[in-house]
Length: 140
Image 1 (cartoon, one colour):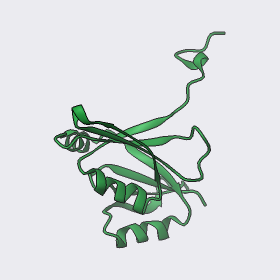
Image 2 (cartoon, rainbow, N blue to C red):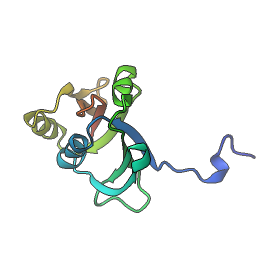
Image 3 (spheres, one colour):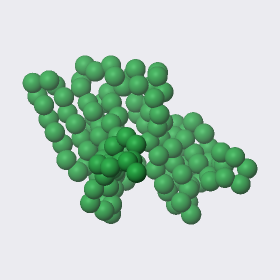
């Protein structure tokens, strides 16, 4: 039986792109507060574009990454925030403590830790410096 779509081509998730207005501020949030590290950087000076790929230090090769897309004159971050196109989900241990630590660092908390439904997994929603939603999911 043929697989629908591209299933026969061994697809895998590689990265999710987020437009950011201030690259250093975004790196401070994603690397400094969320513990990701910069894996590679691609500069395209003729377009004023910088792409920075982030991942977790202990992730296996080929693991999902976040791509920060930065153009100094780009208004894409504002448009993405207004459109609320989605979020990045990150699993964490000790969710309550994690959210408290982020809040103490000035990170806006959109939704405090709690279940989405009775008896469901605990989640919290925080906001990155460009207003993108980051969903934190309890892993313990």
